[in-house]
Image (cartoon, rainbow, N blue to C red):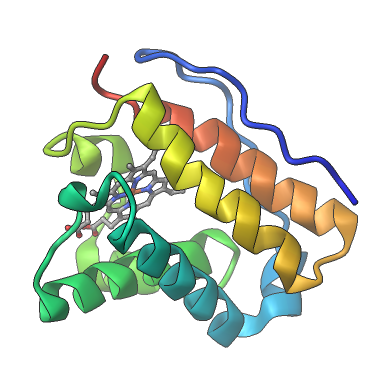
Length: 143
Ligand code: HEM
Protein backbone atom coordinates (compact mmCIF):
# COMPACT_ATOMS: atom_id res chain seq x y z
CA UNK A 1 0.00 0.00 0.00
CA UNK A 2 1.58 3.27 -1.11
CA UNK A 3 1.77 6.11 1.36
CA UNK A 4 0.33 9.30 -0.14
CA UNK A 5 1.95 12.18 1.71
CA UNK A 6 0.80 15.77 1.92
CA UNK A 7 3.79 18.12 1.93
CA UNK A 8 3.65 21.34 3.92
CA UNK A 9 3.11 24.35 1.73
CA UNK A 10 2.72 28.08 1.99
CA UNK A 11 1.20 30.80 -0.12
CA UNK A 12 3.31 31.93 -3.06
CA UNK A 13 5.12 28.70 -3.81
CA UNK A 14 4.89 27.51 -7.43
CA UNK A 15 6.45 24.07 -7.75
CA UNK A 16 6.96 22.65 -11.24
CA UNK A 17 4.11 20.42 -12.29
CA UNK A 18 4.22 17.16 -14.21
CA UNK A 19 0.95 16.35 -15.93
CA UNK A 20 -0.76 13.20 -14.70
CA UNK A 21 -0.19 10.00 -16.71
CA UNK A 22 -2.65 9.53 -19.61
CA UNK A 23 -3.00 5.88 -18.56
CA UNK A 24 -5.18 7.12 -15.70
CA UNK A 25 -7.95 8.06 -18.11
CA UNK A 26 -7.58 4.77 -19.97
CA UNK A 27 -7.98 2.95 -16.69
CA UNK A 28 -10.80 4.98 -15.13
CA UNK A 29 -12.56 5.99 -18.35
CA UNK A 30 -14.32 9.33 -18.50
CA UNK A 31 -17.14 7.98 -16.36
CA UNK A 32 -14.74 6.99 -13.61
CA UNK A 33 -13.09 10.43 -13.60
CA UNK A 34 -16.50 12.10 -13.33
CA UNK A 35 -17.49 9.82 -10.46
CA UNK A 36 -14.23 10.58 -8.66
CA UNK A 37 -14.77 14.33 -8.95
CA UNK A 38 -18.39 13.95 -7.87
CA UNK A 39 -17.40 11.91 -4.81
CA UNK A 40 -14.71 14.48 -3.96
CA UNK A 41 -17.18 17.36 -4.15
CA UNK A 42 -19.68 15.44 -2.02
CA UNK A 43 -17.05 15.16 0.68
CA UNK A 44 -16.17 18.86 0.36
CA UNK A 45 -19.80 19.73 0.75
CA UNK A 46 -19.96 18.52 4.34
CA UNK A 47 -16.39 19.54 5.23
CA UNK A 48 -14.94 22.44 7.19
CA UNK A 49 -14.44 24.28 3.88
CA UNK A 50 -17.99 23.79 2.61
CA UNK A 51 -18.52 27.55 2.79
CA UNK A 52 -16.23 27.93 -0.24
CA UNK A 53 -18.53 25.91 -2.52
CA UNK A 54 -21.96 26.74 -3.92
CA UNK A 55 -24.72 25.87 -1.46
CA UNK A 56 -27.41 25.78 -4.08
CA UNK A 57 -27.93 22.38 -5.75
CA UNK A 58 -27.89 23.44 -9.41
CA UNK A 59 -24.79 25.57 -8.89
CA UNK A 60 -23.10 22.80 -6.97
CA UNK A 61 -23.76 20.32 -9.78
CA UNK A 62 -22.44 22.84 -12.31
CA UNK A 63 -19.26 23.22 -10.24
CA UNK A 64 -18.82 19.45 -10.21
CA UNK A 65 -19.31 19.33 -13.94
CA UNK A 66 -16.80 22.10 -14.66
CA UNK A 67 -14.23 20.41 -12.49
CA UNK A 68 -14.81 17.02 -14.09
CA UNK A 69 -14.47 18.60 -17.55
CA UNK A 70 -11.09 19.94 -16.48
CA UNK A 71 -9.82 16.65 -15.12
CA UNK A 72 -10.90 14.67 -18.19
CA UNK A 73 -9.08 17.25 -20.30
CA UNK A 74 -5.88 17.32 -18.24
CA UNK A 75 -5.77 13.52 -18.31
CA UNK A 76 -5.60 13.63 -22.10
CA UNK A 77 -9.30 13.34 -22.97
CA UNK A 78 -11.48 15.69 -25.02
CA UNK A 79 -10.93 19.37 -24.21
CA UNK A 80 -14.37 19.84 -22.65
CA UNK A 81 -13.13 22.46 -20.26
CA UNK A 82 -11.77 24.73 -22.95
CA UNK A 83 -14.96 24.27 -24.95
CA UNK A 84 -17.24 25.12 -22.03
CA UNK A 85 -15.21 27.52 -19.90
CA UNK A 86 -12.20 28.62 -21.96
CA UNK A 87 -8.59 28.65 -20.85
CA UNK A 88 -8.40 27.07 -17.38
CA UNK A 89 -6.21 29.75 -15.71
CA UNK A 90 -6.95 28.02 -12.45
CA UNK A 91 -4.96 30.27 -10.16
CA UNK A 92 -6.98 33.22 -11.35
CA UNK A 93 -10.27 31.30 -11.09
CA UNK A 94 -9.51 30.37 -7.48
CA UNK A 95 -8.68 33.93 -6.49
CA UNK A 96 -12.23 34.85 -5.41
CA UNK A 97 -12.03 32.06 -2.80
CA UNK A 98 -9.87 32.34 0.27
CA UNK A 99 -7.73 29.18 0.18
CA UNK A 100 -5.14 28.77 2.93
CA UNK A 101 -2.73 25.91 3.61
CA UNK A 102 -5.30 24.27 5.88
CA UNK A 103 -8.02 24.40 3.22
CA UNK A 104 -5.60 22.75 0.80
CA UNK A 105 -5.00 19.94 3.28
CA UNK A 106 -8.72 19.31 3.62
CA UNK A 107 -9.22 19.38 -0.15
CA UNK A 108 -6.28 17.03 -0.73
CA UNK A 109 -7.17 14.82 2.21
CA UNK A 110 -10.33 13.71 0.41
CA UNK A 111 -8.30 12.69 -2.65
CA UNK A 112 -5.97 10.89 -0.28
CA UNK A 113 -8.99 8.83 0.79
CA UNK A 114 -10.56 8.39 -2.64
CA UNK A 115 -7.64 7.70 -4.98
CA UNK A 116 -6.49 4.45 -3.35
CA UNK A 117 -10.03 3.05 -3.63
CA UNK A 118 -9.93 3.12 -7.44
CA UNK A 119 -7.69 0.11 -7.99
CA UNK A 120 -5.19 2.08 -10.08
CA UNK A 121 -1.77 0.50 -10.56
CA UNK A 122 0.76 2.13 -8.20
CA UNK A 123 2.51 4.10 -10.94
CA UNK A 124 -0.76 5.71 -12.04
CA UNK A 125 -1.96 6.30 -8.51
CA UNK A 126 1.27 8.12 -7.67
CA UNK A 127 1.19 10.10 -10.88
CA UNK A 128 -2.31 11.43 -10.15
CA UNK A 129 -1.50 12.08 -6.50
CA UNK A 130 1.74 13.93 -7.23
CA UNK A 131 -0.02 16.16 -9.72
CA UNK A 132 -2.79 17.09 -7.27
CA UNK A 133 -0.43 17.38 -4.33
CA UNK A 134 1.88 19.77 -6.16
CA UNK A 135 -0.58 21.77 -8.22
CA UNK A 136 -2.82 22.38 -5.21
CA UNK A 137 0.05 24.39 -3.72
CA UNK A 138 -0.48 26.91 -6.52
CA UNK A 139 -4.05 27.54 -5.36
CA UNK A 140 -3.08 28.70 -1.86
CA UNK A 141 -3.86 32.41 -1.91
CA UNK A 142 -4.37 33.21 1.76
CA UNK A 143 -2.37 32.92 5.01
C1 HEM B 1 -6.02 23.75 -2.87
C2 HEM B 1 -7.24 23.35 -2.65
C3 HEM B 1 -8.41 23.76 -3.51
C4 HEM B 1 -9.55 24.35 -3.09
C5 HEM B 1 -9.91 24.69 -1.65
C6 HEM B 1 -10.37 24.58 -4.26
C7 HEM B 1 -11.60 25.22 -4.26
C8 HEM B 1 -12.34 25.53 -5.35
C9 HEM B 1 -13.54 26.34 -5.35
C10 HEM B 1 -14.14 26.98 -4.12
C11 HEM B 1 -13.99 26.40 -6.63
C12 HEM B 1 -15.21 27.14 -7.13
C13 HEM B 1 -16.41 26.26 -7.17
C14 HEM B 1 -17.49 26.95 -7.97
O1 HEM B 1 -18.19 27.78 -7.40
O2 HEM B 1 -17.59 26.69 -9.16
C15 HEM B 1 -13.08 25.63 -7.44
C16 HEM B 1 -13.21 25.47 -8.79
C17 HEM B 1 -12.37 24.70 -9.54
N1 HEM B 1 -11.25 24.05 -9.11
FE1 HEM B 1 -10.49 24.09 -7.25
N2 HEM B 1 -9.73 24.10 -5.37
C18 HEM B 1 -8.53 23.60 -4.97
C19 HEM B 1 -7.59 23.02 -5.78
C20 HEM B 1 -7.77 22.71 -7.10
C21 HEM B 1 -6.84 21.98 -7.93
C22 HEM B 1 -5.48 21.45 -7.45
C23 HEM B 1 -7.39 21.88 -9.15
C24 HEM B 1 -6.86 21.23 -10.40
C25 HEM B 1 -5.95 20.31 -10.42
C26 HEM B 1 -8.68 22.54 -9.11
C27 HEM B 1 -9.55 22.66 -10.16
C28 HEM B 1 -10.70 23.39 -10.17
C29 HEM B 1 -11.50 23.61 -11.34
C30 HEM B 1 -11.25 23.07 -12.73
C31 HEM B 1 -12.56 24.44 -10.95
C32 HEM B 1 -13.69 24.98 -11.83
C33 HEM B 1 -13.33 26.38 -12.29
C34 HEM B 1 -14.45 26.98 -13.09
O3 HEM B 1 -14.58 26.66 -14.27
O4 HEM B 1 -15.19 27.79 -12.55
N3 HEM B 1 -8.88 23.03 -7.85
N4 HEM B 1 -12.09 25.12 -6.65
